[in-house]
Length: 128
Image (tube, rainbow, N blue to C red; front, top):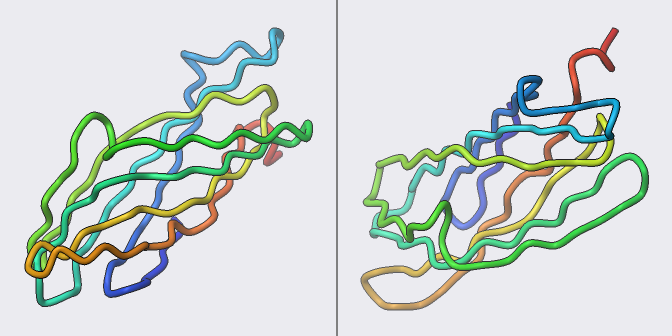
């Protein structure tokens, strides 16, 4: 698990290789990741946007940006957590993701960024 705290928000990431959705002979590798967002601030926050930078071991890189996460812009109160699961497909069996979220302090409407820790996506057969 990778974790990072920035601007009072803790982001934790767990990854899983999805063999049932992958086809290594066609260079299709699917990974799932669970993100847990913990609000350690004394004010409620709303997740407005996400930005991802995705690398794989064959040298390709892509950027993904958009509103919210998995179709929602969650409101997270102080001391609460929000978790979601999403996925990433790669053309190789090893990759890396990192990025950031844009949040709004609900009380004063000011926005701020929170770093998402860099994490590795690795097919289990690469670990042998």
